[in-house]
Image (cartoon, rainbow, N blue to C red):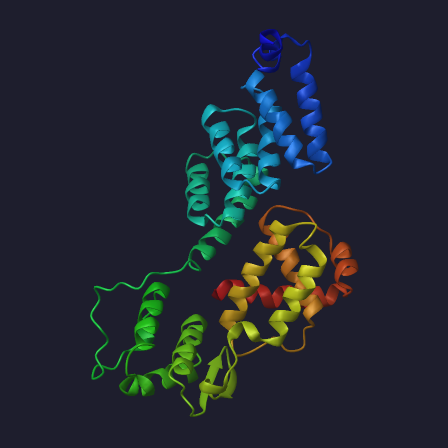
Length: 337
């Protein structure tokens, strides 16, 4: 009995000739077959035998990632970077992909800024990392902001100069307090800001939400980029109930969510940001299919993935000119967001 227990204990696993190679082969084959549970099992065993093998590390990072164990995937990729296992830039790209899925954009910014400062980025990768840096900086602004309780309440008799509030964090703080205060003395300033062509789209949306929270039933004029619309805040739908927004999300979900959930989630986040900015307007004269294709194209470019216009035309059943028009519109939104 003791002999059998010793055999099964795993202590003598190293005695099997070629075991390490066999474990790697079975692990990587399982990754290809999308059998990530077994891939993790085989590759963890292989790693215990050869802790410095970069091929095992990369396979295991991917297996953890695809099986949904993002924190283990991140920890292993960090270890590879620290121990200089594998090609540094390739591992960094893998690490950044994990951070994107975790939504840890501040860490992405820190990592890429460090690379750029140390001039570690090859010329052919510079645009890719710079684009991802810009992408992450925008996402950081989408993170929830805690209302600072120590700030004094907004005083009813002190009208706010909304045009002087340029920082988005401060705008959110003010809007949150207005939603819980008597805004009678702020109404004139809010309406003036909403109808002015030069106010920020983001601030206008959250001020509209403030009026809706208060059940404001008088018609107000909203001006965004020269487009004007009369709305009654109390009767408005939420920004994410817009028909076109939901059509685009539905098209992308049907087209890419199963094949590439990471691409889908990140594309969805950008669309959310843009339609929050546009609210209560939608995009006229461009089809939802063309917009979905253009958003797909934008995010693949952010992550250095090549996709041809021909592929997008076939996937979304639109013509190239429609995708180009949609892309120009989206570029404008990216500049102001």
